[in-house]
Image (tube, rainbow, N blue to C red; front, top):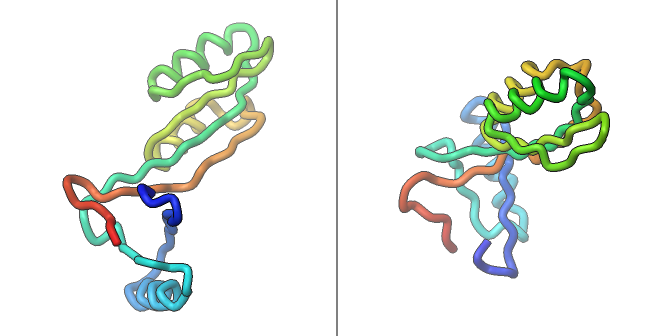
Length: 126
């Protein structure tokens, strides 16, 4: 956040309106919660960051590079047998990348989880 004394947390959940309402009420009861906004109620942008180590030997190297470029990712670390790829986007995009590469080639994956922000000039302020 712009205020160094505050942190911002994005929580994703699924449920009926009553379930979401109960989650909202419980979060608002927490002393540490200053403000709660449901981003799904308006236009917003969601993104997730993923780092993935991929087995990259022989002809695989060029194919992994090509697939990474198609998904607008970056190879952030290279060894003789492994590429580490950084990719950001929607969860669906990241899932699609993993499917394109094939799980047999993937050695390790870490994902940040979804974060979001409202579209346009709407800002979260206290």
